[in-house]
Structures are given as C-alpha cells and as structure tokens.
Length: 103
Image (cartoon, rainbow, N blue to C red; front, side, top):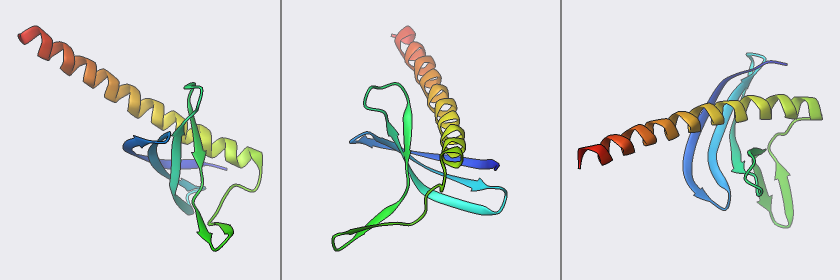
C-alpha cells in the first residue's frame, strides 16, 4: 500500500486536535477529514477517522481494516506533520529573533 499526496491543515488546538489531514491511497482512493491529535503524553501525534453519531449509534465513514494499513497511513501523516510543524517553528524562531534584535 502506498500513501501519497499527504496534506495537513493546521487548526487552533482544541482538546488535543491540532490539524486535519488527507491523503491518497495507492493513487486511487482519496481519504480526508482525518483528525490529527497531540498525544496526551506530548510525544507525538495520533490519527482519528471521521465518524458520525446517529441516535445512540456511532457510524464509521471509513477506517483501516488492519494494523499494517493504519500504521502506514499514520506514519505518512505524522511525518508530514513533523515536517510542517518543525518548519513553522523555525520560521517563528527566525521572526522572533529578527524582531528582538531590531529593538
């Protein structure tokens, strides 16, 4: 299984949710609205799949059917998050240093 075209949309952190993600599986299936949550212990991120509550039932829109597929999707999304968030931290640091040196 190949996970490609990973896209991350950061959101204002709320209850651990830090972004939404999407990706393409095997160049044929787009999946989106994946939640990216900060792990409670702060060591990384976890992925949640979209669901909808109908009455007392929780309906899954889609999800991996085995651990290997779930792991591949999670690895691709977490790698992209780390790249994106590290880059934005570096830009913030550069901007912060430039602002402080001017005063």
